[in-house]
Length: 217
Image: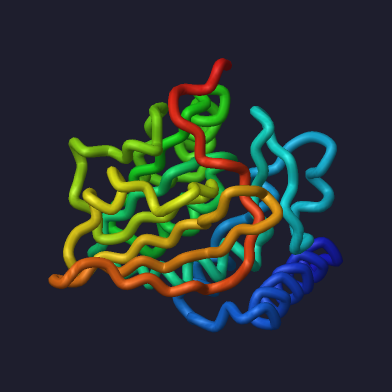
């Protein structure tokens, strides 16, 4: 085994150990995250920090979330193999790639064409075919594809957005950061029941704000 292969294996082991130490215990989520090389989603200055547990800046003033947060959000979403998932905020495409290994179908929406174009190309190169990348205003979801079994929002809203709640199937789950400022945000798990919505607060987080309209690229 070459030194390079050894260091790759060690890096992967450290990466997974780091996820577990932060509370990511779901074996399916860990397997999905092991399959997705975060390094493929980070170019330029920060490429050498791809395997550290930290958020990193990407184009359009956005960030790629730290792996432990991606893992915890994915774990809370409890994606099942037959699920249709909506992700609001494609960003680098990393989260959507993780979801692609867990769900039947993923729709990912971002307001920045400067982000969605390269992600489409990257997914072709990575042979990921069950993810549809849409340039659009994610705060309104994708009514034409609704209802969804799971919805993941990777930007903070003041409240769980009404249009997204309306697109959640009964029994469905939405995970969304909620808060008015980047200093005070909470990750919320919303479950749609026959009686209405159940809300569970999961942990403090920091995300960019969920904005309406298309990005000025």
